[in-house]
Image (cartoon, rainbow, N blue to C red; front, side):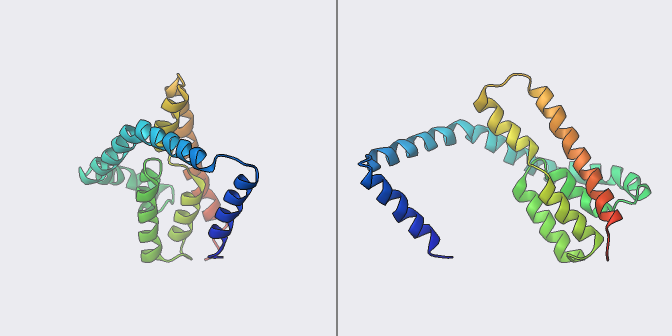
Length: 170
């Protein structure tokens, strides 16, 4: 498995040389395009990282979780997965960290572990995706995309809870 990348590299460059393609100039053009994209999305990425850090460190996430905990307990939803449900639309790395903590604390075979796993695998980093791709695509009507994406995140959370509770084999 570790040899697949060098083999792919040799194949691509060998094929390009056989076809007499200007390998070096094509590579440089690709790097230029990649750097241009990085510079265009950097402000959005920085905004997302700062926003997530502020949301967590300001105590706003803890406040929101404490408000939602009684509702979750009434609906038989473990409140321990709320941080994951709140961070996942914002940050994939933050959500992965929360999921790892949940799995380490409660175990992969627990209801909370299953919900964390299903939720992590079933949702997208909504705000990151919208922030990076919509400006690049020059789309108008961001509010419509945002409303649909948030609705999908909520539906995914509810379906995760339902499916794990129905098929909980623990």
